[in-house]
Length: 219
Image (cartoon, rainbow, N blue to C red; front, side, top):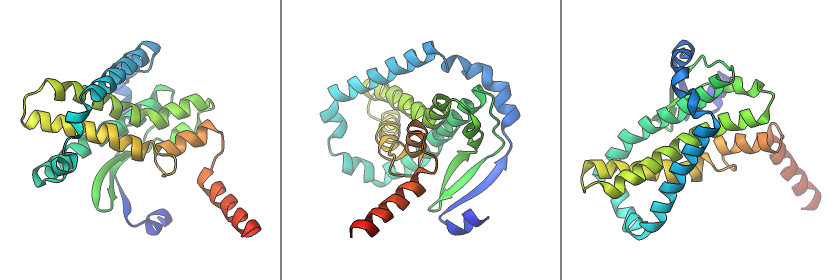
């Protein structure tokens, strides 16, 4: 309650308990959390990245005009929640794969824009930091895979709705997820990955305290 009052621009609305549903569907995604699954993901992402480099000029030509046109903004508003749903499922399944429980899924009103979320906080109890990092990175992993698939579709599709959807998936899953979700300076996935990687819990609080100490001491 206090967290919601402190941050009214990010209200959480819980919807249901997905734990049994995740248990029932876990065998379908278990192969993805293996060495073979990782190699397949890596090959897919590298293919998408290579195609993006080869078609860079076409991909970035008049990008601002293409993104900000009214029809494309409407398309982004449709594509974004679907991608974020898959993003959050990545966190949920990564938590379940190592025995964690996920008892809350809902919608977060982030600056009044509805965004899905799952409570994957059970992963904080995993003793191996590698597992905690995978849970934190799972959403980014999913979005990069979606962006790579969309890159392949975008190259081969004819101009039209399908190609426009693919372009927006590339934009959201490739650019947005790296600059925002993967950015450790923001309190998103990248921050928690870095916190586990360097084994400093409450990293933001400690970092701010240390910066304030440096200001007091030297300024």
